[in-house]
Length: 334
Image (tube, rainbow, N blue to C red; front, side, top):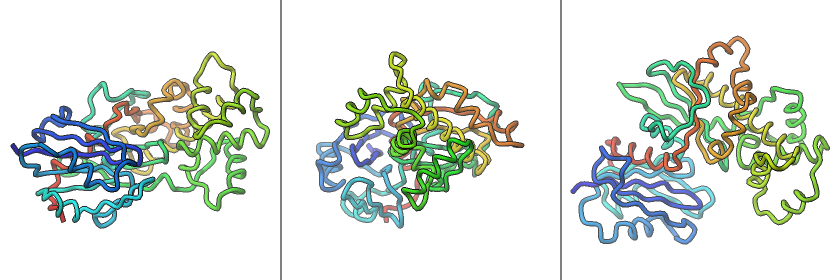
């Protein structure tokens, strides 16, 4: 039996999946999750996963957390360098693909089912129109899809590192605040997991909103303040104004940048919000604040109202995209 191997390789965990054939990418015959930090390199994980597997693995596709350059990638937050040529030499895959995790997510978008997404704005999508992906997680990933040769093709972008552009007086003050700390202020520094503490620090240090003592105590013992800020902002039982204002500002900036991405690639097919944050803050995204910022594009407002906006709910979208790309790629493992 000729099989397909796919993987989603991240700094925290590595997911590997095996497929009996390339027409059943939603149903792997074997899937395991490995703590990435417990291994010195990817080859050890793959060897463990394939131990005892009978059959020929002809194709493989791996989604990786980092930029792929000339078949090599250094994984973000891991001392790993993954080399396409070395993987081919070790395992003998006939076809082998390495692609950035956001590009993998983009590849999966045409394969997503109704239960894999939540729709914020149904809009009026144009058939075969370009599609944008904006994915706030630890950082801010962006990619897009164009219709070519009767199917969608995914393309990488580093748009998350573009200059932050304020759209309100508060955001203008926020930019001034961050320019005292950073030589360059990008959307990623505001519209990501690392961005939420930056917004919070601005509101606190500029005394725009006070920090209650119970929150001070809670944050003092936290390795990562972002989940605490977000959870308190969404908790209707707590009146945490600074957390709510932080999340509101984040949502406005995300809406504006999602709209920017739509305009840059003319994404009349829609925009998909990926990454780990959007599924966790759906109640905040449902408020008018997000769509107001998304649509607020001057003469382009009419166009923006017609663009569908979806939240990707499936946490294994990058794995699905890696499997699809691996099954389609005709490039040899070299």
